[in-house]
Length: 197
Image (cartoon, rainbow, N blue to C red; front, side, top):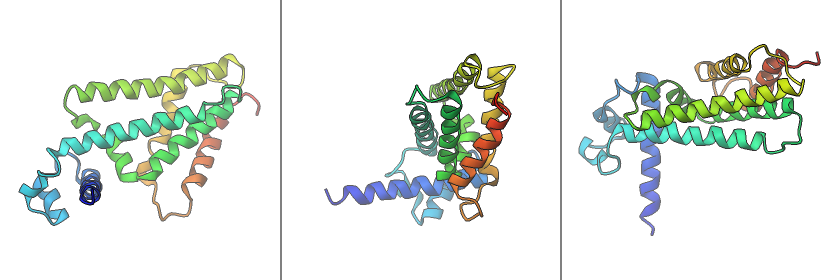
């Protein structure tokens, strides 16, 4: 039993290091040899921990997808709450996932293209389903006269595009905490959608 923890921590270390390299160099430009060197391992011993660098990419992409869905589900759990409140909470949950690990978020947003089939198709289906959740929430807000947007799909895509730019500029040691950023972005983005101004 005592050996299980070091294996897990080594795998976590490999994931963190690979994710940082994928963000800095791109998935395609990062080799297993570079990853092994960065970890202080022989290239051959790296394969005793992981099968391929795509295994790591898969874990990052699908792990964050789970986090995004969990955040959205928690934000919309109280169906009696006003739609605008649910949307605010969903925006804030999205920001918290993005800021928890900005390297993983950047990889999730940009490197998913390197997933092989069928994982790539599965990932795109999850992304479409997540976008549809925001679109449907905005549509419900429009129907309830809480939100105003001529096109719920365009509003959802604009909102998510604005949020997903965050890993490009967010710094964990910056002036604003993740909660500050979540609150400010929610205020800014909801301002254009609320009917009561």
